Image 1 (tube, rainbow, N blue to C red):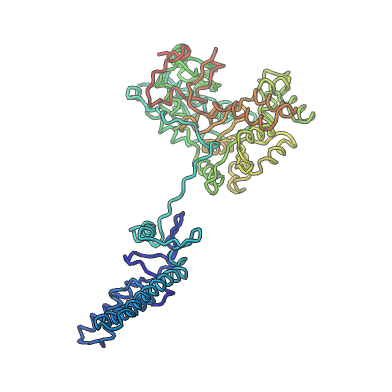
Image 2: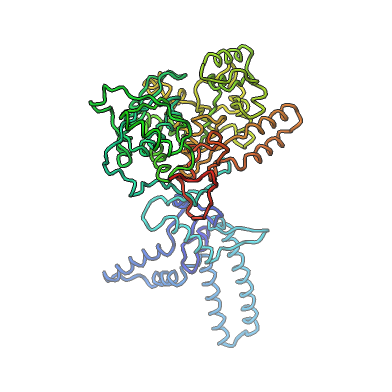
Length: 617
């Protein structure tokens, strides 16, 4: 062996070509630099010796001496062995001379001189050997001193390699991905103590009793208004022990969508899920098919007693009754728990979109989540019909504002005609403009790289989206995410497109709505039911005040952002009991917050309901 080979540890521990590091390294980082140990070299030679002996082969005495020397001192470099050999021979010579008794003083002086030379030789050999190979064997100099690896160092390095290679025999180690904490802007509220509770009580299972009659319903409004109205009609049919005919949908609203129930919802699934609750049929039986039904618009926000009394009497008399309106026809509170749970079963389990809508919706979600990135679904209700209805024209041109006024006066059932746009905005009654929405997201801490899906139809105004896109360029909609071929079956049907938006909004990491419309209510309630997914409800009245201060120069951006975050700290979708109101019209909508009713608290804390929540049996 030569000095360039470097010293080997006398304890025989495995050595690596690189020293200890502070980060975990892959097994492949070591594979190219591992060398066979001297011990394995000697083992091979020893095997050869054994084989030679078995074959009656004898080495020359000098060869046997060299092999014996290597066996006994395999852990020392050759330079050391030669030096020790010379010293040993000199020592033997001196001892022999001492025994002869001649030149005793010279012999002693020579012995001492030889020991001094040997000490210097040993030190130089040791330092030079480590200086040449120190880096290769993991030793290094620190502050001018040589740091030698110890057995403990060798063992720790060997253990690292063994641990990374595992005992599974895999060529590559199992990498442990570092878990980065979720940024606060994407974290959902804590809801560990809450769970879904909509199971059907055993004593409420339909036993096949004779029906009191048939209910035909005409669901009115947009998709989400019709959706929640249908759920109310399911509950009303249960209260009246009536048979429900598959709903017909509104074809005459602003969107003039000709789609019917079967075009949007999986109607067979709807019937199957609710089979143990009520009877649902596709059409009236033949004996009633030609009979003229009794038309009746139910009173809004009615209690169960209204349907068990006046309405049940009409049903038994006419056998077929047609409800001309379905929106908000049942109270939010004061109903039996079994009825509230039925409303949720209808909404969250029975009303499933058709396979075509569900599949494309999931594709859009997957495309938004490219590389597992989170996204915001922004319900930017800055559409012509909503602006005309609310009378809001902030940031629009005079011509655009005039068009909204003309539309408002042309719709007969919109009761408010004269509206002061500035006052309405300061009261918080207007949808956020695209610029206001961008400032809101920026103040809440969402970076410009955030992926945003716009849940809305066509945004009104010739230049409305310019300010938003300058701050957030990664903006998508169903029109930009889907291919033309994928979108072709839905393109002419606004309610089917709204169903796609519903799916994307429900699955989003954060849902932000700029106005309290029917879709905002339906989606936020569904997200609460699915585990209180993060949903931001902007305080429009106070937010508008802050924006005006920012634009006026009386508020810096830093202070503006701080105030916006503080203002919305408790408006992120965390659990709270549904808020009662002075009258049903001003209560929090049941479908916007199905707690209590369809969500329960594991801690089983006794929460005394308000008198407004008095249950009617």
